[in-house]
Length: 431
Image (tube, rainbow, N blue to C red; front, side, top):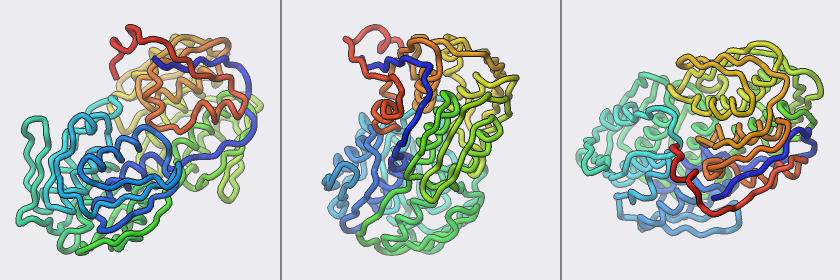
Protein backbone atom coordinates (compact mmCIF):
# COMPACT_ATOMS: atom_id res chain seq x y z
CA UNK A 1 0.00 0.00 0.00
CA UNK A 2 1.25 3.46 -0.93
CA UNK A 3 0.32 6.49 1.15
CA UNK A 4 1.37 10.11 1.51
CA UNK A 5 2.65 11.33 4.86
CA UNK A 6 2.35 15.09 5.31
CA UNK A 7 3.64 17.36 8.04
CA UNK A 8 1.42 20.39 7.74
CA UNK A 9 1.39 23.99 8.84
CA UNK A 10 3.97 25.57 6.52
CA UNK A 11 3.24 28.14 3.78
CA UNK A 12 4.12 27.40 0.14
CA UNK A 13 6.64 29.42 -1.86
CA UNK A 14 8.23 29.11 -5.29
CA UNK A 15 7.22 28.11 -8.81
CA UNK A 16 5.32 25.12 -10.19
CA UNK A 17 4.84 23.97 -13.79
CA UNK A 18 1.40 22.73 -14.83
CA UNK A 19 1.16 19.58 -16.96
CA UNK A 20 -1.07 18.88 -19.94
CA UNK A 21 -4.81 18.62 -19.32
CA UNK A 22 -6.00 15.18 -18.18
CA UNK A 23 -9.55 15.73 -19.45
CA UNK A 24 -8.29 16.80 -22.88
CA UNK A 25 -5.80 13.92 -23.11
CA UNK A 26 -8.36 11.18 -22.41
CA UNK A 27 -10.54 12.56 -25.24
CA UNK A 28 -7.81 13.34 -27.77
CA UNK A 29 -6.09 9.95 -27.49
CA UNK A 30 -9.25 8.02 -28.51
CA UNK A 31 -9.76 10.60 -31.29
CA UNK A 32 -6.57 9.25 -32.86
CA UNK A 33 -8.70 6.25 -33.92
CA UNK A 34 -10.36 8.52 -36.48
CA UNK A 35 -7.04 9.37 -38.14
CA UNK A 36 -5.39 7.50 -41.02
CA UNK A 37 -1.73 8.11 -40.31
CA UNK A 38 0.52 9.01 -37.40
CA UNK A 39 -0.68 11.48 -34.73
CA UNK A 40 2.02 13.05 -32.62
CA UNK A 41 0.46 14.25 -29.36
CA UNK A 42 2.59 16.54 -27.21
CA UNK A 43 2.27 17.84 -23.62
CA UNK A 44 0.65 14.63 -22.34
CA UNK A 45 0.52 14.41 -18.54
CA UNK A 46 2.33 11.47 -16.96
CA UNK A 47 -0.67 10.03 -15.12
CA UNK A 48 -2.25 6.61 -14.84
CA UNK A 49 -5.39 7.53 -16.83
CA UNK A 50 -3.25 8.43 -19.86
CA UNK A 51 -1.30 5.19 -19.54
CA UNK A 52 -4.58 3.25 -19.40
CA UNK A 53 -6.11 4.81 -22.51
CA UNK A 54 -2.87 4.31 -24.46
CA UNK A 55 -2.84 0.66 -23.35
CA UNK A 56 -6.44 0.26 -24.54
CA UNK A 57 -5.53 1.59 -27.98
CA UNK A 58 -2.57 -0.79 -28.18
CA UNK A 59 -4.80 -3.70 -27.14
CA UNK A 60 -7.04 -3.17 -30.18
CA UNK A 61 -4.17 -2.84 -32.63
CA UNK A 62 -2.85 0.72 -32.52
CA UNK A 63 0.89 1.36 -32.69
CA UNK A 64 2.01 3.60 -29.84
CA UNK A 65 5.57 4.88 -29.52
CA UNK A 66 6.89 7.16 -26.80
CA UNK A 67 8.96 9.99 -28.27
CA UNK A 68 9.79 11.49 -24.88
CA UNK A 69 8.11 11.63 -21.47
CA UNK A 70 5.33 13.96 -22.67
CA UNK A 71 5.04 13.04 -26.37
CA UNK A 72 3.72 9.94 -28.12
CA UNK A 73 3.19 8.89 -31.72
CA UNK A 74 -0.06 6.99 -32.33
CA UNK A 75 -0.80 5.16 -35.57
CA UNK A 76 -4.28 3.64 -35.81
CA UNK A 77 -4.08 2.90 -39.55
CA UNK A 78 -4.16 -0.86 -39.05
CA UNK A 79 -6.71 -1.04 -36.23
CA UNK A 80 -9.55 -3.41 -37.13
CA UNK A 81 -10.75 -4.58 -33.71
CA UNK A 82 -13.84 -2.78 -32.38
CA UNK A 83 -14.09 -4.65 -29.06
CA UNK A 84 -12.41 -2.94 -26.07
CA UNK A 85 -11.00 -5.18 -23.28
CA UNK A 86 -13.24 -5.21 -20.23
CA UNK A 87 -10.44 -5.24 -17.62
CA UNK A 88 -8.89 -2.01 -18.94
CA UNK A 89 -12.04 -0.04 -19.79
CA UNK A 90 -13.65 -0.50 -16.38
CA UNK A 91 -10.76 1.38 -14.73
CA UNK A 92 -11.35 4.52 -16.75
CA UNK A 93 -14.28 6.90 -16.92
CA UNK A 94 -13.16 8.24 -20.31
CA UNK A 95 -13.38 4.79 -21.87
CA UNK A 96 -16.83 5.71 -23.17
CA UNK A 97 -15.15 8.03 -25.71
CA UNK A 98 -14.09 4.85 -27.49
CA UNK A 99 -17.74 4.28 -28.45
CA UNK A 100 -17.90 7.53 -30.40
CA UNK A 101 -14.44 7.12 -31.92
CA UNK A 102 -14.98 3.51 -33.02
CA UNK A 103 -18.48 4.26 -34.33
CA UNK A 104 -17.09 7.18 -36.30
CA UNK A 105 -14.25 5.13 -37.78
CA UNK A 106 -15.82 1.70 -38.29
CA UNK A 107 -19.55 2.13 -37.77
CA UNK A 108 -19.36 -0.35 -34.87
CA UNK A 109 -18.15 -0.49 -31.26
CA UNK A 110 -18.25 -2.91 -28.33
CA UNK A 111 -17.22 -1.14 -25.13
CA UNK A 112 -17.82 -1.95 -21.42
CA UNK A 113 -19.52 0.67 -19.24
CA UNK A 114 -17.10 3.34 -17.96
CA UNK A 115 -15.21 3.17 -14.66
CA UNK A 116 -13.30 5.94 -12.87
CA UNK A 117 -14.39 7.85 -9.77
CA UNK A 118 -17.66 6.90 -8.12
CA UNK A 119 -19.63 9.93 -6.91
CA UNK A 120 -23.10 9.36 -8.24
CA UNK A 121 -24.70 7.83 -11.29
CA UNK A 122 -23.03 8.59 -14.59
CA UNK A 123 -25.76 7.79 -17.12
CA UNK A 124 -24.77 7.93 -20.76
CA UNK A 125 -28.29 8.48 -22.02
CA UNK A 126 -27.31 11.76 -23.73
CA UNK A 127 -24.46 9.97 -25.52
CA UNK A 128 -26.84 7.25 -26.71
CA UNK A 129 -29.44 9.82 -27.77
CA UNK A 130 -26.85 11.39 -30.07
CA UNK A 131 -25.68 8.07 -31.53
CA UNK A 132 -29.24 6.94 -32.19
CA UNK A 133 -30.07 10.26 -33.87
CA UNK A 134 -27.14 9.61 -36.24
CA UNK A 135 -28.46 6.18 -37.16
CA UNK A 136 -26.85 3.83 -34.65
CA UNK A 137 -28.48 0.84 -32.98
CA UNK A 138 -27.47 0.50 -29.32
CA UNK A 139 -27.81 -2.63 -27.21
CA UNK A 140 -26.37 -3.80 -23.89
CA UNK A 141 -25.49 -7.48 -23.67
CA UNK A 142 -23.00 -9.48 -21.66
CA UNK A 143 -21.69 -6.42 -19.83
CA UNK A 144 -20.89 -4.58 -23.09
CA UNK A 145 -22.43 -1.64 -24.89
CA UNK A 146 -22.88 -2.77 -28.51
CA UNK A 147 -23.23 0.01 -31.06
CA UNK A 148 -23.66 -0.37 -34.81
CA UNK A 149 -24.40 2.15 -37.55
CA UNK A 150 -27.11 1.27 -40.03
CA UNK A 151 -25.42 0.83 -43.39
CA UNK A 152 -21.99 0.88 -41.76
CA UNK A 153 -21.68 4.67 -41.46
CA UNK A 154 -23.34 7.28 -39.27
CA UNK A 155 -25.40 10.10 -40.77
CA UNK A 156 -25.38 13.71 -39.59
CA UNK A 157 -28.30 14.87 -37.44
CA UNK A 158 -29.52 17.75 -35.29
CA UNK A 159 -29.15 16.84 -31.62
CA UNK A 160 -30.43 18.93 -28.70
CA UNK A 161 -28.82 17.98 -25.39
CA UNK A 162 -31.39 17.74 -22.59
CA UNK A 163 -28.65 18.82 -20.17
CA UNK A 164 -25.17 20.21 -20.62
CA UNK A 165 -22.86 17.19 -20.71
CA UNK A 166 -19.15 17.38 -21.44
CA UNK A 167 -18.87 13.64 -22.01
CA UNK A 168 -21.83 13.48 -24.40
CA UNK A 169 -20.69 16.57 -26.31
CA UNK A 170 -17.25 15.05 -26.85
CA UNK A 171 -18.58 11.60 -27.74
CA UNK A 172 -21.02 12.97 -30.32
CA UNK A 173 -18.26 15.14 -31.81
CA UNK A 174 -16.08 12.05 -32.21
CA UNK A 175 -18.87 10.03 -33.82
CA UNK A 176 -19.87 12.88 -36.16
CA UNK A 177 -16.40 13.75 -37.44
CA UNK A 178 -16.45 11.04 -40.14
CA UNK A 179 -20.22 10.72 -40.51
CA UNK A 180 -22.07 11.58 -43.70
CA UNK A 181 -23.42 15.12 -43.71
CA UNK A 182 -23.76 17.79 -41.02
CA UNK A 183 -24.28 17.20 -37.30
CA UNK A 184 -25.47 20.07 -35.10
CA UNK A 185 -25.15 19.78 -31.31
CA UNK A 186 -27.29 22.32 -29.43
CA UNK A 187 -26.89 23.05 -25.71
CA UNK A 188 -23.33 21.76 -26.07
CA UNK A 189 -20.72 21.90 -23.30
CA UNK A 190 -18.20 24.75 -23.60
CA UNK A 191 -15.32 23.46 -21.44
CA UNK A 192 -11.73 24.16 -22.56
CA UNK A 193 -11.10 20.48 -23.30
CA UNK A 194 -14.11 20.39 -25.63
CA UNK A 195 -12.46 23.21 -27.60
CA UNK A 196 -9.10 21.43 -27.44
CA UNK A 197 -10.57 18.26 -28.94
CA UNK A 198 -12.16 20.27 -31.76
CA UNK A 199 -8.83 22.00 -32.43
CA UNK A 200 -7.05 18.62 -32.52
CA UNK A 201 -9.56 17.14 -34.96
CA UNK A 202 -9.53 20.25 -37.17
CA UNK A 203 -5.74 20.14 -37.29
CA UNK A 204 -6.07 16.60 -38.69
CA UNK A 205 -8.59 17.66 -41.36
CA UNK A 206 -11.98 17.69 -39.61
CA UNK A 207 -14.57 20.42 -40.20
CA UNK A 208 -15.86 21.50 -36.77
CA UNK A 209 -17.26 24.96 -36.03
CA UNK A 210 -18.55 26.58 -32.86
CA UNK A 211 -16.62 24.67 -30.18
CA UNK A 212 -16.64 26.85 -27.07
CA UNK A 213 -20.21 27.98 -27.76
CA UNK A 214 -23.46 26.17 -27.07
CA UNK A 215 -23.95 25.22 -30.74
CA UNK A 216 -21.32 23.03 -32.41
CA UNK A 217 -21.54 22.11 -36.10
CA UNK A 218 -19.60 19.16 -37.48
CA UNK A 219 -19.48 18.57 -41.21
CA UNK A 220 -18.41 14.96 -41.69
CA UNK A 221 -15.31 14.19 -43.72
CA UNK A 222 -14.19 10.98 -45.41
CA UNK A 223 -10.69 10.94 -44.01
CA UNK A 224 -8.39 12.52 -41.43
CA UNK A 225 -4.65 12.74 -42.03
CA UNK A 226 -1.91 12.57 -39.43
CA UNK A 227 -0.25 15.55 -37.80
CA UNK A 228 1.18 17.02 -34.59
CA UNK A 229 -0.78 18.58 -31.74
CA UNK A 230 0.04 19.91 -28.25
CA UNK A 231 -2.54 19.55 -25.48
CA UNK A 232 -3.60 22.58 -23.43
CA UNK A 233 -2.47 23.03 -19.80
CA UNK A 234 -4.63 21.43 -17.12
CA UNK A 235 -7.16 23.90 -15.73
CA UNK A 236 -7.97 21.70 -12.72
CA UNK A 237 -4.35 20.97 -11.79
CA UNK A 238 -3.64 24.72 -11.91
CA UNK A 239 -6.72 25.42 -9.80
CA UNK A 240 -5.63 22.79 -7.28
CA UNK A 241 -2.28 24.54 -6.73
CA UNK A 242 -4.08 27.89 -6.51
CA UNK A 243 -6.27 26.40 -3.78
CA UNK A 244 -3.23 24.97 -1.99
CA UNK A 245 -1.62 28.41 -1.76
CA UNK A 246 -4.86 29.97 -0.54
CA UNK A 247 -5.24 27.28 2.13
CA UNK A 248 -1.61 27.17 3.30
CA UNK A 249 -0.56 30.79 2.75
CA UNK A 250 2.57 31.87 0.91
CA UNK A 251 3.26 32.94 -2.65
CA UNK A 252 3.55 30.68 -5.73
CA UNK A 253 3.99 31.40 -9.44
CA UNK A 254 1.95 28.81 -11.35
CA UNK A 255 3.44 28.46 -14.84
CA UNK A 256 2.19 27.05 -18.15
CA UNK A 257 -1.46 28.03 -17.69
CA UNK A 258 -4.16 29.80 -19.71
CA UNK A 259 -5.35 32.47 -17.23
CA UNK A 260 -8.74 32.86 -18.93
CA UNK A 261 -9.55 29.22 -18.14
CA UNK A 262 -8.97 30.00 -14.45
CA UNK A 263 -11.11 33.14 -14.13
CA UNK A 264 -13.96 31.38 -12.30
CA UNK A 265 -11.48 30.04 -9.71
CA UNK A 266 -9.59 33.34 -9.47
CA UNK A 267 -12.83 35.22 -8.73
CA UNK A 268 -13.63 33.03 -5.71
CA UNK A 269 -10.11 33.17 -4.29
CA UNK A 270 -10.16 36.97 -4.53
CA UNK A 271 -13.48 37.03 -2.64
CA UNK A 272 -11.88 34.93 0.10
CA UNK A 273 -8.88 37.20 0.63
CA UNK A 274 -6.19 35.76 -1.61
CA UNK A 275 -4.30 37.88 -4.14
CA UNK A 276 -4.08 36.73 -7.75
CA UNK A 277 -2.04 38.34 -10.53
CA UNK A 278 -2.54 37.16 -14.11
CA UNK A 279 0.42 37.08 -16.49
CA UNK A 280 0.67 35.93 -20.13
CA UNK A 281 1.01 32.20 -19.45
CA UNK A 282 1.33 32.17 -15.67
CA UNK A 283 -0.60 33.20 -12.58
CA UNK A 284 0.80 34.42 -9.24
CA UNK A 285 -1.17 33.48 -6.13
CA UNK A 286 -0.44 34.99 -2.73
CA UNK A 287 -2.17 34.72 0.64
CA UNK A 288 -0.84 36.29 3.82
CA UNK A 289 -3.97 37.43 5.66
CA UNK A 290 -7.33 36.15 6.85
CA UNK A 291 -9.58 33.92 4.77
CA UNK A 292 -13.21 35.02 4.49
CA UNK A 293 -16.42 33.08 3.90
CA UNK A 294 -18.11 32.95 0.52
CA UNK A 295 -20.73 30.93 -1.33
CA UNK A 296 -19.80 28.65 -4.24
CA UNK A 297 -22.00 26.79 -6.71
CA UNK A 298 -20.47 24.43 -9.26
CA UNK A 299 -21.75 24.80 -12.82
CA UNK A 300 -20.74 23.93 -16.37
CA UNK A 301 -17.98 26.12 -17.85
CA UNK A 302 -17.52 29.08 -17.61
CA UNK A 303 -18.96 28.56 -14.13
CA UNK A 304 -17.02 27.20 -11.16
CA UNK A 305 -15.91 23.65 -12.08
CA UNK A 306 -17.28 20.65 -10.21
CA UNK A 307 -13.76 19.15 -10.33
CA UNK A 308 -12.62 22.01 -8.02
CA UNK A 309 -15.41 21.56 -5.50
CA UNK A 310 -13.52 19.48 -2.89
CA UNK A 311 -10.44 21.73 -3.16
CA UNK A 312 -12.40 24.94 -2.55
CA UNK A 313 -14.11 23.18 0.37
CA UNK A 314 -10.75 22.95 2.17
CA UNK A 315 -10.36 26.74 2.02
CA UNK A 316 -13.95 27.28 3.17
CA UNK A 317 -13.25 25.03 6.17
CA UNK A 318 -10.58 27.51 7.29
CA UNK A 319 -12.42 30.74 6.40
CA UNK A 320 -14.07 33.04 8.94
CA UNK A 321 -17.83 32.61 9.01
CA UNK A 322 -20.33 30.25 7.41
CA UNK A 323 -20.09 29.34 3.73
CA UNK A 324 -22.58 27.55 1.49
CA UNK A 325 -21.23 25.14 -1.11
CA UNK A 326 -23.72 23.90 -3.71
CA UNK A 327 -22.96 21.06 -6.12
CA UNK A 328 -24.72 21.83 -9.38
CA UNK A 329 -23.48 18.90 -11.48
CA UNK A 330 -23.27 15.57 -9.60
CA UNK A 331 -25.63 13.98 -7.07
CA UNK A 332 -23.11 12.55 -4.61
CA UNK A 333 -19.86 14.46 -4.51
CA UNK A 334 -19.60 14.93 -0.74
CA UNK A 335 -18.31 11.49 0.17
CA UNK A 336 -15.09 13.13 1.38
CA UNK A 337 -16.86 15.09 4.15
CA UNK A 338 -16.37 12.43 6.82
CA UNK A 339 -12.63 12.49 6.10
CA UNK A 340 -12.55 16.27 6.52
CA UNK A 341 -14.39 15.92 9.82
CA UNK A 342 -11.56 13.72 11.09
CA UNK A 343 -9.36 16.79 10.67
CA UNK A 344 -11.70 19.04 12.64
CA UNK A 345 -13.82 20.49 9.85
CA UNK A 346 -17.42 21.47 10.61
CA UNK A 347 -19.55 20.53 7.58
CA UNK A 348 -23.21 19.62 7.33
CA UNK A 349 -24.53 18.15 4.08
CA UNK A 350 -28.12 18.22 2.86
CA UNK A 351 -28.42 16.75 -0.62
CA UNK A 352 -26.37 18.90 -2.98
CA UNK A 353 -25.72 21.62 -0.38
CA UNK A 354 -22.91 21.70 2.18
CA UNK A 355 -22.93 24.24 5.02
CA UNK A 356 -19.34 24.85 6.13
CA UNK A 357 -18.55 26.63 9.39
CA UNK A 358 -14.98 27.89 9.37
CA UNK A 359 -12.68 26.66 12.14
CA UNK A 360 -9.46 28.28 13.46
CA UNK A 361 -7.38 25.33 12.28
CA UNK A 362 -7.47 21.83 10.87
CA UNK A 363 -5.59 19.04 12.63
CA UNK A 364 -3.61 16.26 10.98
CA UNK A 365 -5.30 12.84 10.78
CA UNK A 366 -5.29 9.53 8.94
CA UNK A 367 -7.69 9.86 5.99
CA UNK A 368 -8.50 8.18 2.68
CA UNK A 369 -8.71 9.59 -0.82
CA UNK A 370 -12.17 8.48 -1.93
CA UNK A 371 -11.84 9.82 -5.49
CA UNK A 372 -9.42 11.82 -7.64
CA UNK A 373 -10.35 15.41 -6.73
CA UNK A 374 -11.28 14.61 -3.14
CA UNK A 375 -7.84 13.01 -2.83
CA UNK A 376 -6.19 16.22 -4.02
CA UNK A 377 -8.28 18.11 -1.46
CA UNK A 378 -7.05 15.75 1.28
CA UNK A 379 -3.49 16.61 0.31
CA UNK A 380 -4.26 20.35 0.52
CA UNK A 381 -5.95 19.85 3.90
CA UNK A 382 -2.92 17.90 5.15
CA UNK A 383 -0.54 20.65 4.05
CA UNK A 384 -2.67 23.32 5.75
CA UNK A 385 -3.37 21.36 8.97
CA UNK A 386 -1.38 21.40 12.17
CA UNK A 387 0.43 18.10 12.74
CA UNK A 388 0.86 14.94 10.68
CA UNK A 389 -1.60 13.54 8.15
CA UNK A 390 -1.55 10.22 6.33
CA UNK A 391 -3.42 10.01 3.00
CA UNK A 392 -4.30 6.47 1.93
CA UNK A 393 -5.65 5.12 -1.38
CA UNK A 394 -3.48 7.62 -3.27
CA UNK A 395 -3.86 5.70 -6.53
CA UNK A 396 -6.96 7.86 -7.02
CA UNK A 397 -4.81 11.00 -6.91
CA UNK A 398 -2.23 9.62 -9.33
CA UNK A 399 -4.97 9.09 -11.93
CA UNK A 400 -4.97 12.84 -12.57
CA UNK A 401 -1.94 14.59 -11.03
CA UNK A 402 1.54 14.27 -12.44
CA UNK A 403 4.37 14.26 -9.86
CA UNK A 404 2.20 15.88 -7.20
CA UNK A 405 4.57 14.92 -4.38
CA UNK A 406 7.63 16.30 -6.20
CA UNK A 407 5.84 19.49 -7.21
CA UNK A 408 4.55 20.22 -3.70
CA UNK A 409 7.90 19.36 -2.15
CA UNK A 410 9.45 21.91 -4.50
CA UNK A 411 7.18 24.54 -2.97
CA UNK A 412 8.25 23.70 0.56
CA UNK A 413 5.50 21.24 1.38
CA UNK A 414 6.58 18.48 3.77
CA UNK A 415 5.10 15.52 1.89
CA UNK A 416 6.60 12.11 1.21
CA UNK A 417 5.58 8.76 -0.22
CA UNK A 418 5.56 5.77 2.12
CA UNK A 419 5.09 2.21 0.83
CA UNK A 420 3.92 -0.41 3.33
CA UNK A 421 2.65 -4.01 2.99
CA UNK A 422 -1.00 -4.37 1.97
CA UNK A 423 -3.46 -4.31 4.85
CA UNK A 424 -7.20 -4.22 5.34
CA UNK A 425 -7.48 -0.62 4.12
CA UNK A 426 -7.22 -1.68 0.49
CA UNK A 427 -9.77 -4.42 0.93
CA UNK A 428 -12.37 -2.37 2.81
CA UNK A 429 -12.15 0.86 0.85
CA UNK A 430 -14.90 1.50 -1.69
CA UNK A 431 -14.45 4.10 -4.41
